[in-house]
Length: 139
Image (cartoon, rainbow, N blue to C red):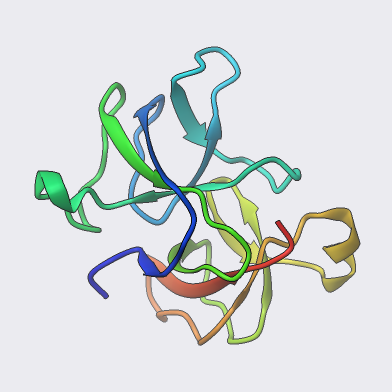
């Protein structure tokens, strides 16, 4: 895997890292600074953004961002497919939600409450970081 984006049409944006971030983590806008993003702590129905590598600046999926650095983000739309970090190994076809900036197993009954943000397309890697291919849905 060389890129967070597998197949996506959502817009790319740039923001300032309000906390240390790594590609594959999910973020939301900071409530204290409109230009900063922080880890998304829960699936709460707000717009989701995933940190991506900045290949134009020579950054890869293994390069982290520090506080105050410009960070590249993808705002995925329904149907987009991305690679994301997960809190543990996930099985294919598992509904997932965001928990503390990474993917976690979701309760299928939560679909109607807008907590599920995607479905895994294949088994994740079996050791950390747990890279998982996920298709965005329900957002």
